[in-house]
Length: 148
Image (cartoon, rainbow, N blue to C red):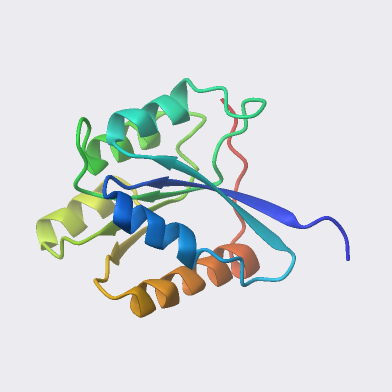
């Protein structure tokens, strides 16, 4: 088998306990794919990573898992900044929120989120969602490479 494919995932989550569970759930179930998780604990840090940070030779994330209710900059503010930037707008954004308000769901899709996922309370459900994310984005979807 050749070199495994690496998918860089920016996880934006302000709850340290939930962030721990997300990290635990991304166990790399898809053979031949390695998930590299980059984390941000608020919207401002996410924007810094996306627009200014020189993460490992300027490599950008391939995918963003974005909490909606964040301190400093909200999820919608991060999403808007990302999708308005010419070279970053193609990075797929999966909104991951405990909000099931239709106004939040509409706002996310209106601002070009690729998915809006309900954040579960139970770990087993979270693990199942993560497995579906891993399988879809590693086996089915074609992810465009973004450049700064």
